[in-house]
Image (cartoon, rainbow, N blue to C red; front, side):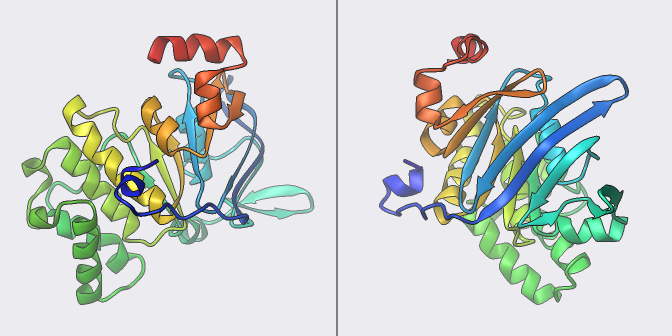
Length: 268
């Protein structure tokens, strides 16, 4: 149960609508075969957690879902729409940058590093995309940004620059910035891995609250406690393949594959 649920706010139950469908996805970097036929579905409101050793393909898969990386084979759909490509005559043709940018408006992504604009305040970082990409007027964008900064516990830091914020605070600003685009899907790529241990909890609490609100999320993380507590599905990847997937509590307590057992034995 999430922090929000523990305080009496019941989590919005996942729906039946399929938000993400990954079918037979392969990815090569030169001769390096990073993803080897990945299949995955995520339904509306689900929290799908990906774990596995470094180099297993987790982050690459996330980047492919947002078309930050092109795929070598397969199909990725978000809300039924083919991501990054149009299909004609059984062949894929990559979309233009403008078309890809339109698709990305509905997909928020939070990276390991915060990637904030150093010369802009927290508030200015959050309002940048709604104004520049969605054409919101400044007053509307600012009102929403202040609500989001309050949601992530940083209403008193709106005028601070990234250099004046801790790593955990910067990551929460990054989450608010992603939410400002009102995405239907949030991707988190090891959002706490660059943080000092005492700052991890604040970021995870924001993510738990997002899950409780019904946000569809795919989370790459080493935080096994978060996976157990918040995840609807847990997928263990190794060597570019899905080794094991299921209910997080079941996979963590009773992993079926020896590779999963070995990995969890090192991180638990």
